[in-house]
Amino acid sequence: MFDTICAISTALGIGAISIIRISGNEAISKVAKIFDGQNLNKVKSHTIHYGHIIKNNEIIDEVLISVMRAPKTYTKEDIVEINTHGGIATTKKVLEILLENGIRAAEPGEFTKRAFLNGRIDLVEAEAVSSLINSETDLERQLALNTISGRISKKIKKVRDIIIELMANIEVNIDYPEYEDALEITIDNLPPKLNIIKEELTNLLNEAKTSKIITNGIKVAIVGRPNVGKSSLLNAFLNENKAIVTDIAGTTRDIVEGTVELKGIKLNFIDTAGIRKTNDIVEKIGVDKSFAIIDNADLIIHVLNNNEELTKEDKEIITKIKNKTHITFINKSDLPNKLPIKKDYIIGNTIEENGLLELKNKIIELFNLEEIKTNNLEIISSTRILDLIKKALNHIENALKSTKKNIPVDMIAIDIKAAWDILGQITGESYQDELLDTLFSKFCLGK
Image 1 (cartoon, one colour):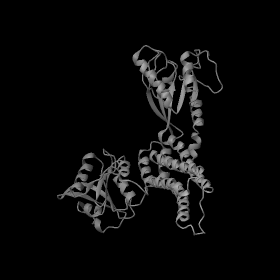
Image 2 (image 1 turned 180 degrees about the vertical axis):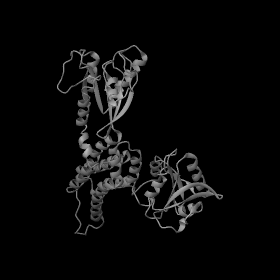
Image 3 (image 1 turned 45 degrees about the horizontal axis):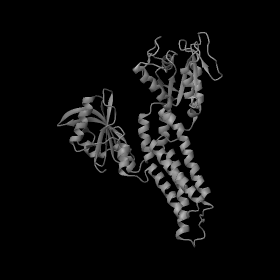
């Protein structure tokens, strides 16, 4: 924690500039030794200086150097950022010189880890930094930024404050029974207070359903018999010929995937093998995969052929998906109709892309995508945080069950205290070193 670290913070490759970040007590003095320009030890904080990186009086690169003094920096330590010319050789050479001068190469995520350990951010905000870097849509970006701003941390802190107030009252009742000003916590008045905590935690979990859609997208499986137009529908959505389309039944023998964005949400399409009875071993494997994908998809688009009556395979698929979120798309509307048409079916054809807009609007409606887009996005997306909230909720529910069994309040307080401790792990008010090592190892170098 007390040594000085460095790493390349920009993607390594050909570009206009590269940035090498240095953080630690010796960041300024170490860089000053290899910088030919203004004396960095004497410059003001948050200033930029022109000069050259030198080694043995040889100019290595023409650079701009930013100097930021603690504590008003990302890590709350002295930070120097060297802006070099972009390019693999130049950037690596400057980094090599820094290492030769006693600066250690940073581990993945070590800058953000130091920001946490030095108290600038909590664990929730630290995780959001990684999410921001990896965000692929604008909604993911907004979600990560809202988390970095501390909004989620405030929600967790609110619940912890409610619990600590309850715990304090219980402790006073136990240790100082003669103290009359404290609210007496009994089996009768404890459940309403526990229910408030339960409601807060439940609301956090319910909000997380929206975050799952934002961060992971919607897994959409396109299913149906061979030759009904599944691959053509996928190509129409993606606006490219991703899947092979022929008149030969069984052309798609394995899954074909593609992603598009709808209202800021990723739609992760999977074109499955046509479902039918077959003796072809390879095709049969594809059919088995199709059924497995149906089980795991968030949305099923069942494609039927307008020009053919329902078959045994069609009916089998209808039964399989009836309790899942699904849309029935009747393809080949340009051909004579031989199917019973239901009110909620969408009719079109993939040649002229008829019905595609209606299909998109139906997806927007089913997943409330318009509402998500206008949501304030103060929601939780981290799997780690969600797991901890579930554990805390479980302890509160156990405490509620205990009140019905007339278990003494001081025994019930054990579950209440456990919930409080678990919520502290979310923000990092209590943590284990192994957790930090695992969490920050997922970050890129230089962050």
